[in-house]
Image 1 (cartoon, one colour):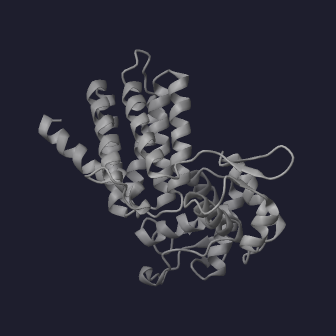
Image 2: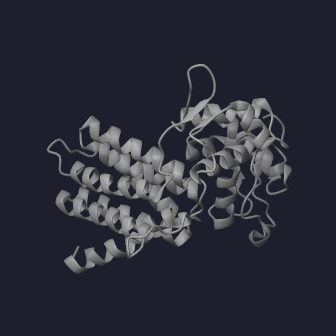
Length: 321
């Protein structure tokens, strides 16, 4: 770790996830926060977990144990815990730059010197941010100098077209003759959704579960082009949703919807699962654009997918499913 005063973006993200588990009661007072268990839970190595725990300890949110490591304070008062942790410098620049691009406050082409002046950050911070955006497919380096933003879902029309495209592709994936679910991956996907339902959901945790769900079903189609298409849409969705914080109840509704689709597939009812998937995407699109076809505020995007679960659940009850 570079020092508890300057944690990396990953360490802050992991610290926030650990804090959410403490707030929800999943990590009870007095629990030993073991690095190996947390690394397995969040799918990372022990090193960033160690940094995240040190960061939480530096803010007196967890306490060091007599032997080694850290634990949840025995005299825990969850109401006094912060709901969010301060962002790292890297993460703050990433969010500001991405937010300005999504709001169309940045042009298609940018120069590093212009960005340095606009945001008042150091060159090293900027380069790490640009590298991250490049790895995520947001920008690419231009021949010669400068950077070029690639197409994203930064307009209501583009988001609408994305939903319509997904409505064509994702339900059809469930009807492929080559469709076949891996039992282990299905159980892992189901458990992740159950964990979200049992805990206090956070935006990043839901996005990971949401991506896993849609990509699992696309991969199960046995068609590599379908998987490629869904991965591309997930990437674009991540960019447009990464700055928003969905309502926990909306996250729970979406999790229940995903579980209903998995139930149908496990029972071999692929046509019904495809109907649920199509309905889910259709309702999400309607919610996003409003009843009259007009775009809602950007903050509604991710929540719309969750609220679509209510409609799907009603459809299931009406059909006796």
